[in-house]
Length: 324
Image 1 (cartoon, rainbow, N blue to C red):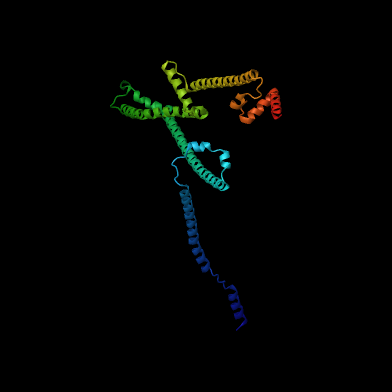
Image 2: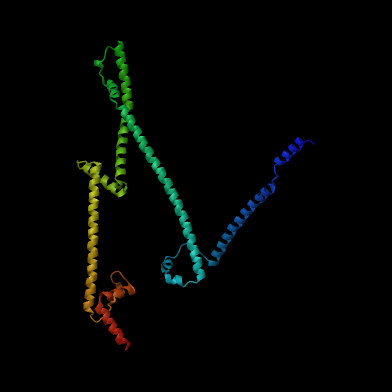
C-alpha cells in the first residue's frame, strides 16, 4: 500500500460521522407525554372526588345563604373556631378570591373589546359624515349650481326647438332637472349629517352631555323654549342647565351644612343640659347609650371624661369611697 493510499484512508476514517442513538430518546419522550397526561387527569379527578366528599360530609347545602347568620359573624365567633376550621376557611376564601379575580379579568377583557368596537363604530360614523359632507360640497359647487339653474329656464327664453341651439337647450334642461332631483336627497342627508357631526363634536367637548339626566334637561329646555316661540341654541341651553344644576348642588350642600351644624349644636346642648341636670352623676346615661362625639362604648366614656375633668374627679372620688 502506497503512502497516498494510507493518507486517503486515514482522512476518510477521520471524516466518518459519529453514530448518535436518538431513537431511544424519542421513544422515551413519546412514552412520557401520555403518562404525564394520565397523571394530570388523575390529579383533577382526585380533586373533584375530594370536593364531592367534603360537600357530602357537610350534609345538605342550602340553596341560598342565611342573611341573619352571615350578619351575626363577628371576629369573636371566628376566634372561637378551632385552628383546623380556620385553615379551611382561609383556603376557601383564597379560592373565592382567585375565582373572583378571574371573573373580573374576563369582564375587563370583555369591556375592553366592547370599548374598541364602540370606538370603531363611532369613527366609522364620523368618516361617513365626513364623506357625505365632501360630496355635498361637490354638489354645491358654483359651476355645478349654474348648470342646474338651466332646469329653471322658461320655455319662452329658449331658441326655436327646431334649431340645433334650441334642441341643445332643451336637452340641457332635461338633464339639469334630473340632476336636481338626484341632488336634493343628497343635500338634505348631508345637512342632517352636518348637524349630527356638530352635535357629536359638542358632546365630545362637553362630557356632561353624556349623562342621560343632563342631556334630557337640555332637550326639555330647548323644547319648552321652542313651544314658547323663543327658541334657544344647544350651546345656550347647555349653559343654562349647567348653571341651574350647579345652583341646586350649592343649595343642597348649604342645607347639608346647616343640618350638620344643627345636629352638632343639639349634641352640645344635650351634653350641657345633662351635665347641669345631673350634677351628681359622673357619667350621664346618654353617653353610654348614644355615644359621644361619634364614639361608642368605652371610647365614648373615656372621651367624655377627658372633656369634663370635674366628672372624672367625681368618678375617682366615688371609686375611692367605694373601695373603703
